[in-house]
Length: 116
Length: 109
Image (cartoon, chains in turn blue, yellow):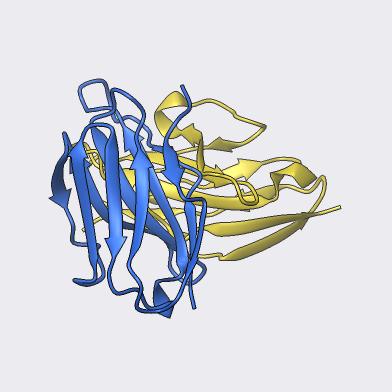
């Protein structure tokens, strides 16, 4: 299993542009999470899905951020328009469903986003 | 509400010295606690979880419900332990994790 796959690994773009981050969870995992990592705030949960349905998006900073999960094997996080303060590393993680104790989350390599 | 606190953002120890990374949590129920580690420019990976009661790479962590703590300890630090460490809490219901702000550990040769 290749694990959680994120693309791109690095993204550099100008302020105001639309940014789309992609994630492929581990096959069979029902939960998918998007996190943002910064030096100041550490790891923040943005949104998570269960069976492709968004469950909690309270961590999404503002309306410029949106996330979708059209099927069990793909999710996107979109920022439109992007701003310099969005620069961070964005991680995607997935985990199997409950029923067999709480399962640890498996993380992707992250996307390092720089907004100029 | 649940909360995970890692009071130290940065921690430096000499090689061979004991190391303890602190983690305190607030949650009224019975959470599950985890430690994740992130080596330089790598993905986060699970280090250990309290229900396993195991030692990974020489690290151990004991859940102290009285003090609501889950400190990570290693008796003799190694240079390869230098990394970012995150403490995380999971509630009995839901797969959502709550992460602390992380502690960056540097082991000085």
